[in-house]
Picture 1 (cartoon, helix red, strand yellow):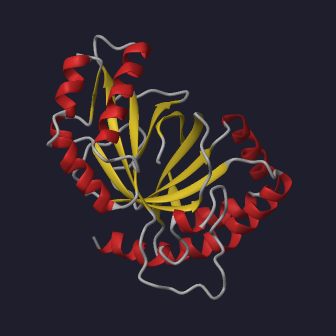
Picture 2: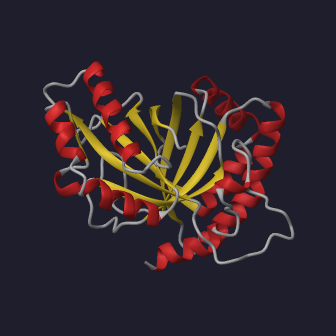
Length: 279
């Protein structure tokens, strides 16, 4: 808990509400006169492991998703967004894909889940589309909530690419050092990259686990404990290679600065598709 609260104090200083800025804009460098009020994350993001059932097919899953979207909208959760991400170039024994839910905040998430579990929607979905998929595990044990600091937001296309790195602070380093990195070397790199690629669709967030990472099941390539997830998002999947080309050409100092602060596992890349937009 101390780790999570400390991250709140640091990340809150450069995170602002999505309603306060247009999408596809960096917020790594806030205005000099910005007030440092009580920090809060600007989104709450959950990950649910999903496995195919015996009756799974793309058509069956699409039909189930359509019914689910209508049901949660009718339940009053139009402001919740949802996507599905599937491992790209790798696979897991734990799941076939992951559902990602985007909530305005934790309070909205708690109210949404309470309404959902008492609505009977899950039961009606399974009756209408039996054995198509199972998400969240037994008793929802494979639901992983995070407090998300959207550093640079981007408008998603229906298909996108996302990369996750699970990171721990190096000895003697702290969230303050990560904040310095984001406002310095990373922001400088991004400014040049954006000037050379004005139509890029790149987004970044730092997601802090809101669960006991020592007590949950993790999938392949994820450390038993981690301080945060560094998330790279490409609204246009074809543009991801542009980023790595830029890193190779003029981003090595930036990468070294990042490595001085944290040790991160190799990036896991996923292909994503939007299931439900936030109204």
